[in-house]
Image (spheres, rainbow, N blue to C red):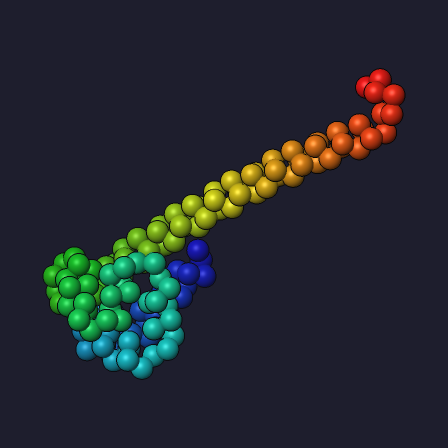
Length: 133
């Protein structure tokens, strides 16, 4: 998560071309057209409204949602709030995937154990010629 938050802060700085501490619509548009690092981060950040900044038809609506103080620009606080929502979503997705993998591993272990016991029983039966058990 530290690496993600560091990348998020860098992305904000890259978009804030005039270093005003806020990101304007013009700065967003320029960044999502030309800055590969910004584009990559937004694609993978996990926050839907930040991802919509990449799509001009959705940009205005996304900014309306993200711009909680209705200033017309995103400040660092609004950016951080969106980033934290994205991070929470990513963590939840990882948790779900981890649980799915754990269930799959448990099912595979159970299937292996059942097959192993079945084969062991067959070998025992083959060895137990007098069927004394």
